[in-house]
View: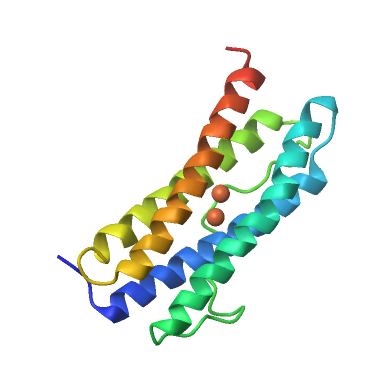
Length: 151
Ligand SMILES: [Fe+2]
Ligand SMILES: [Fe+2]
């Protein structure tokens, strides 16, 4: 059953907050990590920052179009993701945290896709595109994990 417009706006605002938290943590990792093994991961996450911020912008624009408003810094809900390790050479912990963040993002987009079905095709289409992007990140980092764990 399709959700109400208010419910859809709320779920999009949640997705917006999640994207911003991802931006913050990927920024952290791209700066804090040390070592030869971390270099490729840092490069990949640096590039992702812009992409994830772009997702927040797309979500924000859609929220506005359907009658909602984007929250300011006090309204953004963060602190749900695994926090970056104090061990700056722990690349595996970083990769695992990225995988968790991407899985949560995929789950949130699937939720909106279901909630908009038969009702709001434009929001649904946006969330399908964002789901595709997050699945790509997820597969990339699952590949990194295989290599960095050595199995
Ligand atoms: Fe994203
Ligand atoms: Fe992502």
